[in-house]
Image (tube, rainbow, N blue to C red; front, top):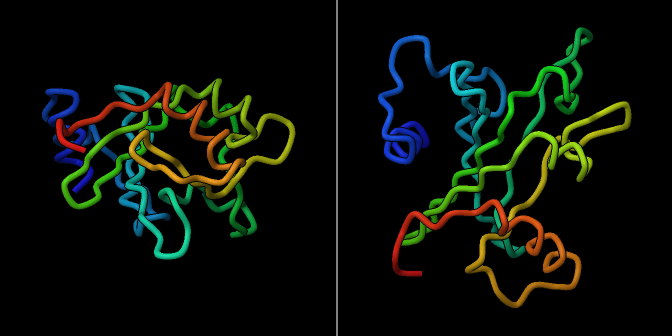
Length: 145
């Protein structure tokens, strides 16, 4: 599902070895693309909290889950949102994710986080503050929302 959204978004035919299906986080349609330097996830709507949730982690040498670090991360993380008749994509630059503590840079990063597209309303204070910085990187892919 996220491959078709990515293909239409970039007007690029992702074929052959261009897109890599990541072994972990397949529940979130985890993909990466070396040629365009991005990793992507399909965020999921959760029944009890506003926003959309996604996992972003890998296994370490001891087979423990750990956050991605700055050195191994591509230049962008794309987070795809599909919710009934609404579609959108966040295009987060790596340095922003490092500054927000999501990708680790000598300190602990996050293995999952929540995103809040512009159409999410009625948020609590923390979610609203998160939405404020996130929507700068969001693009609506539908015209009606």
